[in-house]
Image 1 (cartoon, helix red, strand yellow):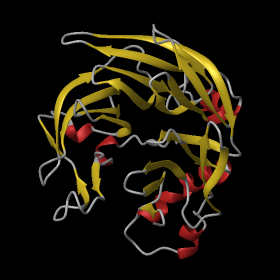
Image 2 (spheres, helix red, strand yellow; image 1 turned 90 degrees about the horizontal axis):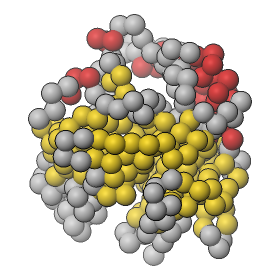
Image 3 (cartoon, helix red, strand yellow; image 1 turned 90 degrees about the vertical axis):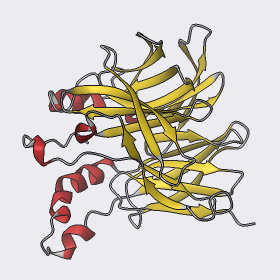
Image 4 (cartoon, one colour; image 1 turned 180 degrees about the vertical axis):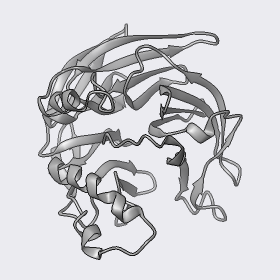
Length: 309
């Protein structure tokens, strides 16, 4: 949201967590666990945003908004042991990785990355806001390929505020075009360029997207961006240890909206609230286990929903 500080030493490092929700697979170790890092030399400067896990390669890729410039961190993730561990493999600094937001992996060596803005809000806040609310197609999607000793990349599409991205299937990439309030579906060409195939209009500014095992697209976002921006400006008062006027925190509640789209069914609302759980940003679903999760951009917890059997 463009919040920043000159006192960088006062900003704590970010962290990653693993949620084991399947009590049958993990009868003694289910629950929420912080992931331990291994061989990560700059853990204290880690500020993650988008994350992607490629299961067959046990590869975890994270967009890191490091104080010295944006980059991607690549790990191998051990989720079998009682203590999940991410072993750092490499840091990717590339001229095309400018404002990384979301990552979607084709395989362990190949993935798409969204750069949500051309103008960085820390350096050009006014131009960044014009880019956001003007719906200017200055953000982009980059295709990256990793080799043992090199990294290659190319811009494959330009999108107004490309936020979350997700592979809907092997040939289709979904992109949340936040400022224009729609999700774009792109066909992936053989050279990995993107060709617009369909546009899904939503009644909010979509943040992140995900696909479930049945090919449904889950879309979460922000129905009233001014409320979200106002909350961000006030929220520092609620992070302090000393007692404060409770009305300050109560006023921070902002709307949430999560929808589901299917190629035959179209779009429908899954969750909507005026503030009980605010700033919805991501929804994911495990069809096999019958469980869905919704996160909030500035919420302290997550919504866990189980399907009726």
